[in-house]
Each structure stands twice: as C-alpha cells, then as structure tokens.
Image 1 (tube, rainbow, N blue to C red):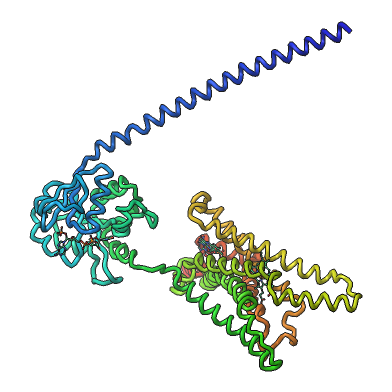
Image 2 (cartoon, rainbow, N blue to C red):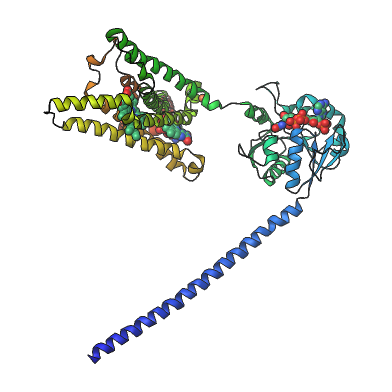
Length: 508
Ligand SMILES: Cc1cc2nc3c(=O)[nH]c(=O)nc-3n(C[C@H](O)[C@H](O)[C@H](O)COP(=O)(O)OP(=O)(O)OC[C@H]3O[C@@H](n4cnc5c(N)ncnc54)[C@H](O)[C@@H]3O)c2cc1C
Ligand SMILES: NC(=O)C1=CN([C@@H]2O[C@H](COP(=O)(O)OP(=O)(O)OC[C@H]3O[C@@H](n4cnc5c(N)ncnc54)[C@H](OP(=O)(O)O)[C@@H]3O)[C@@H](O)[C@H]2O)C=CC1
Ligand code: HEM
Ligand SMILES: [Fe+3]
C-alpha cells in the first residue's frame, strides 16, 4: 500500500515537474517568438526607411507640356507621389483645374526647369516644338500620345516627334493609362505602362518614374516598337475576335439544325407544335455541342502542327499564318468552350423542374401503374449514370483548366506544371467529354431510326471533330512516331541528315 502511495506521489511529482518544465519551455519559446517578431519588425522598419528617404530624395522636377485632361491628371498623380511639377502652356495662368502645388509657365520657360518633359499634346499640334529645339536639346521627351485609328500615320507619333526635334531623346510611355484612371486612383483596367526608346538611360529614367507612380513599366525595346504600343489601346479584344465569330457561327448553325429536326419535322409530319423546345431543349443541345467542338478545336492545331513537323522533318520552318494565329487564340477558344459547358450544366440542372418533363414523368407513372410489371433495368441505370458521371468529371477538369489560366494562378506554377495541366489534363478533359457524349448517344448512335430528313442527331455532329482528332493524336503518340517527333522538337532535321549522308558519299 505504502509502496503504491509512494509510486503515486512520485508520479504526481514527476507530472508536476513535467508541467513546470513545459511552462518554462513555453515561456522560453514565447520569448524567442517575441524577440523574433521584434527583430522582424525592426528589420521591416529599417527596410522601410529607404522608401521614406527615397520619397524625400525624389523631389525631382518634371515638366509637363499641355494643361489638358491627361497632362493635369498625370501632374496630379506626380505631385501625390512627391515630384514637383512645372506645366508648360500656351496661356500660363494658374487655373483652378490644375493640381495644387504645380507651377505653370510658358512652354520654353517650363522646359528650362527639367530635363524630362512629358509631351501631353495631340500629335497634330507638335509643330510648335520645332521652335523650341534649342531649349529642348539633349532633353528627354516622353511621348504619351494616341491616335484615333490604327495605323493612322505612316510613322508612329514618337518617331515623328524624334524627327521633329532631332536633338532630343524620345521615349514612348504612358499612352495605355487613361486620364480618368490616373485622377480617380481607380486603376482597375491595367497598371501596365509599355515603354520604348532608343536611349536606354532615358528609358530607364522614365521607367523609374512609372514605378514611383505605382504602375508597372514594361520595356518594349527601341522606338520602332512605338507603333505597336500606339495601336495597343485602339485594339478591341484582338485575340477574342476569331473565337467569338467562330462560336457565333457554330451556335447559329447548330440552332437551325436542331430547329429543323425537332420543330419543323414534327410539325410537317405529325402536325405537332413543339416550338417550346427552342427555349431550353435546343439550347441544351447547341451549347454542349459547341463546347465540345471548341474544346476539340483547342487541341487540333497542336496535332496539325505535329503532322506538319513530321512531314517537313524539321521544326525550323515557320507554320503557315493561319496555324500560328489559331495557336495563339487557343486560350480564348478554350475559355469560350468553358462558358458554353457552364451553360449546359445550368440548363441540365433545371431539367427536373420543367413543366414538359414533369408532364412526361406523370404520364410514365400512370402507364407504370396500369401495367405493374416494369422491373428496374440495370443496363439503363448503368447507361444514364455512366454518361452523367463522365460529364461531371469532364466538367470538373474543364473548370480546373479555366482556373489555371487565371494569371494569379498561372504565375504560381512553373512552365512544366502549366503544360501538364493545360496539355495532359486538357486531353483528358477532351476524352471525358467525348466519352460523355458517346455514352449519351449509346445504342442510338448512327441508328437509321434517329435520322430525320437524312439528318443525324445533333450530338453525332458534336463527335466528328473530337473523335477524328483523338484518333490522330493516338497515332501520333505511338512510340515510333512519338520518337521521331520528339527528336524533331529537340532540333534534329531529317533533310540535314540526308544531305550530310550525301556529303559523306561525295567525299568518298
Ligand atoms: C478552359 C481552358 C483554358 C485555357 N487556358 C489557357 C491559357 O491560359 N494559356 C494557354 O496558353 N492556353 C490555354 N488553353 C489552351 C490549351 O490548353 C493550351 O494551349 C495547351 O497547351 C494545348 O496543348 P497541346 O498539347 O495541344 O499544345 P502544345 O503543348 O502547345 O503543343 C502544340 C504543338 O506545338 C509544338 N511544340 C510543342 N512543344 C514544342 C517544342 N518544344 N519545340 C517545338 N515545337 C513544339 C508541336 O508542334 C505541338 O504539337 C486553355 C484551354 C482551355 C480549355
Ligand atoms: N485623355 C486621356 O485619357 C489620354 C490621353 N493621351 C494623350 O495625351 C495627349 C493629351 O491628351 P488630352 O490631355 O486628353 O488632350 P486635351 O485636348 O485635353 O489637351 C491637349 C493640350 O495640348 C495643349 N496644346 C498645345 N498646342 C495646342 C494646340 N495648337 N491646340 C490645342 N491644344 C494644344 C493644350 O494645352 P495648353 O492649353 O496648356 O497649351 C491642351 O490642353 C494626347 O496626345 C493624347 O493622345 C494618352 C493617354 C490617355
Ligand atoms: C456536370 C456536368 C455535366 C452534366 C450533369 C451533363 C449532363 C448531360 C445531360 C443530362 C445530357 C442530355 C441532355 C438531353 O437529354 O438533352 C447531356 C448531353 C450532352 N452533354 Fe453533358 N453534362 C455535363 C457536362 C458536359 C460537358 C463538360 C460537355 C462537353 C464539353 C458535355 C457535352 C454534352 C453533349 C455534346 C451532349 C449531347 C447534346 C445533345 O445532343 O443532346 N456535357 N449532358
Ligand atoms: Fe485570333
């Protein structure tokens, strides 16, 4: 008994010691943690110091020519960021519209105050700058101008400015940010500022200013790039145009195809009014078919490119323009396809609450009650469950592809991971969606009873491109062909081998 008590008290003491030790250790870790936090805070504070010092250092004077909308907005932003701003104007009186703290002088007086001059004037009014050539000599002129039309002038505005005042160093920048966004602070659109110029020091200084204003400079090279930069704000979704036209044409064609089969045909033969199908049934054919076809068209150019490379025996020859263009708008094609797949899923979700479907179900129930002998068909249950499961899995991967194409996500994965998702999982998505459609068709596939005016069911059309493409892809990944293709992609050339062999023969 005593022994037991002794053991127990020993155990308590031991436990007490353990707890004490635990408290001491916790306190020690807590102290360590606090000192670590203090360290980090001190470090952050000292790291923050140069920033505050920088802001006092950057009391640089910038001259802005033109007191119009853009000049004023840029001046406002620059003063906010700690620069001192001098405006050059035809009428140098201080207007209430100009930002507080700015100075307004005549153009030539203003130019003498800074070696960076932002020309916030329309190109049509640049002529007077030739008179200021002497004052402007050696200075950095920043051309911010835009045109009203793409390729409006033979040369870019920035190159024109450089020709007009040859002694200056012209840099193109800021044309992609709007006056409104600069002033309201709501830079929702784009923070990117494309910059180009022949003098790299001048370009770097302008890019430093861009950075200080909280924008992101993107170096586009020499002044030759100015034309492209000037066209950029005038373009309206250039990479989206072809995918949008293509999907519109596809949807219109499919819609009329289904109307002929499912509305006009029953009306002509059975005098039945089935026009209500145009609201949900037909769109729920058009959208999934368009989604599957567009998804196949995302992967088709890769297959065509591979065939071309195999045929040519080299990767060093350019693809035809149409293929290049097609390759470049695959992302947009894919995202439109994803949009259509979403529509298909939404239309599918409402199927059970449709009046027509409920009416049909009621009728089926009544007939079932009449002839009670209607056992569960396991094969039908398998059929419907399997095509639905394939659709759900396909849709899941489709959404995954869409998520990885968001810049915030794609920036966090490396190139190999991105290719894996986009290429490998992309093909898997295509296989699952094609299998979903094939399984949906089931035994009815190509059965003559489904033909109406010789037109097959719409989903048969949906399968043409994906199936053809998958068969070709399957052939391309056969080891013998894949090996040649991989060698070609690694730089091997068939002709150079033949020619070197020939050279070898002549040598002998
Ligand atoms: C929802 C959705 C979102 C998408 N988002 C994006 C996106 O954000 N960004 C994007 O780029 N695409 C996106 N796509 C499009 C598509 O997923 C990708 O373009 C995908 O990489 C295509 O895979 P692929 O295997 O056909 O082509 P790739 O892997 O690009 O190959 C195509 C062809 O390029 C050539 N090639 C490939 N590698 C080499 C090499 N090393 N040397 C020489 N030639 C080579 C070959 O000829 C090859 O056949 C999206 C698609 C969908 C459905
Ligand atoms: N507004 C915007 O959102 C953006 C504009 N830009 C570019 O910025 C430049 C200025 O645009 P914005 O401020 O909107 O235009 P505004 O018409 O509002 O201003 C232009 C300014 O140019 C000066 N100017 C000099 N000479 C002449 C002249 N002969 N006739 C008329 N004006 C003259 C004027 O200033 P003063 O009276 O003081 O002499 C005038 O206020 C343009 O090249 C434009 O393409 C670029 C990106 C966005
Ligand atoms: C959650 C995912 C999905 C579900 C639940 C689903 C469900 C369905 C259903 C119920 C049908 C039959 C529609 C009808 O009777 O008219 C159908 C057909 C079809 N689905 Fe899906 N689907 C899904 C995803 C997808 C995806 C991602 C694609 C392709 C990109 C796709 C392509 C098709 C096609 C082409 C048809 C045949 C259309 C027709 O001719 O009627 N589905 N799907
Ligand atoms: Fe395009």
